[in-house]
Amino acid sequence: MSNYTRRDLLKFLGRSSLVGLTTVSGLTFLNGCTQKKIHKTVLNNIPPLPFTALTPSDADDLLLAEGFNYEMLVKWDDAISDKDTFGFNNDYTAFIPFDPDNPDDGLLWVNHEYTSPMFVSGYTGEADYVRTKEAVDKEQYSVGGSIVRIKRNSKGTWQVVYNDPHNRRITAQTPIPFNWPEPIRGSKQGIGTLGNCSGGITPWGTILTCEENYDAFWGETDYSDPENPTHVRSVLGWEDFYDNPPEHYGWVVEVDPKTGEAQKHIALGRCAHECATMYQMPDGRLVVYTGDDANDQCLYKFVSAKPKSLVEGTLYVANTMDGKWISLNMEEQPILKENFANQTEVLIRLREAAALVGGTPLNRPEDIEIDPLTGNILISLTNNKPKGDIHGSILKIVEKDQDKTALEFTASTFLAGGPETGFSCPDNMAFDVNGNLWFTSDISGSSMNAAPYAEFKNNGLFVVVAGGPDAGKVVQIASAPTHAELTGPFFSPDGKTLFLSIQHPGEGSSSLTDLASNWPDGGNNIPRPSVVAVSGPSLEFLAS
Ligand code: FEO
Ligand code: CA
Ligand code: CA
Image (tube, rainbow, N blue to C red):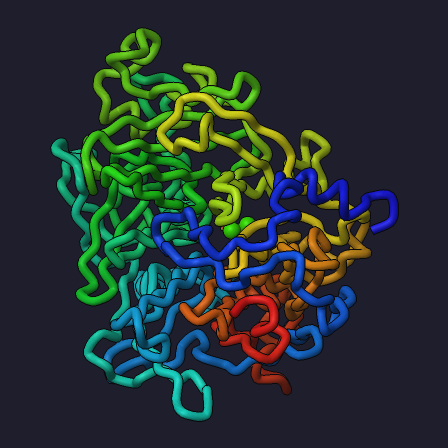
């Protein structure tokens, strides 16, 4: 941190006024989903970090700073029961304990975002390779989500409980109803979920899993001539084998981990949803923030009209230039009435509607978290290369009077990526119980270890320290294997474990005999996306 002093950073964090506090024990996590008390009572009395930051690495390994260690929890294709295996390219994770007072036993939800025909379904790269329905079925089984019961034993080791009755898969072939009074393209349900990138949890213990790049699986409908919409083909070509409309995907999906029951929430709109971050108002109404992860797409907020409803309410898009949430209700927007037949069409063609009412194009809005110390909303803006935003930033939204239902806010940059801060392309975020902000980076595999990203080397996990003499420092904690992205950071209730996904190691491999990564099994083994449990004294120092 040369020109960029920590005092400056604390100003950015909006926490400079908090640093003088001698006690913060009364502050709660304002994220209504977690409702945890801040543990450390004296921010100023936190001693210096007992370890040094990891330096960037290009090793094909999961490296951790001193005082952190990890154990392998589950890998792609591991059997979780006699019937099911763990899916591919794990992203968001969420641990839901059965008993809030027992942090050692619960259900782990894991998103499986996308597939790799080379690793999953036998794609050979040969000119005479013929794609089959059997191959597509394997791909469809590899995405969606997994539910596994995990337990921590007396030695502190987490293990998957094989064959637990809760263990199950949700896949691209699981029927899921739409939570909406109108059918969507002629159906009250969609077949499967996919593109499950990041997510969130609800105060009632269910999971929100977000369908991001659905167009890679089912293509997209081009409505530029609304009278004659045309189909834009997908990368994977699933539509050659199944007749599923793209409009059945791109939704926020709620899953009950105890039963596996799922529903798609149409009221939150259809786009490349990265995540859904829910906040419950004291009167029970829900506020859900969600970003559309693509260049020049928007940030959204749903405010429910009544407690616990994800049907009745208003969806807004952010105009960050004016600091306003703009209604996407066609009864309030004549321009939407001119362009869409009904509100269901507005929600299906959300990007078009957002542009019409003046939503601000952003630089790939990805994960969203609510700062437990301030109540501010943080949004990762990963990058926007065509616009010259190479390293991305984290946007800070302060709702008027800290009211999450407010229609006005101020927006500013919370933290910018680049050489001065030592990270690039921020993506998933998580706050620990002490208010430290953890985040991962997502430099694409094809850009990694080359200009202008060379100095950052492989993707990593970082923490922005909340208090003490290191407050405001950005500290690298982990370095990912070759081509991988660290995703889905989620803390156990006692803060002693950080669940972390290692997604797409070796995804740039040219063939099964020319692998870019052999992580985690080493040798000549193919790489396997995996979920690990990170622990150790340095984690406990920061997060418990
Ligand atoms: Fe799947 Fe936007 O990352
Ligand atoms: Ca992501
Ligand atoms: Ca990403």
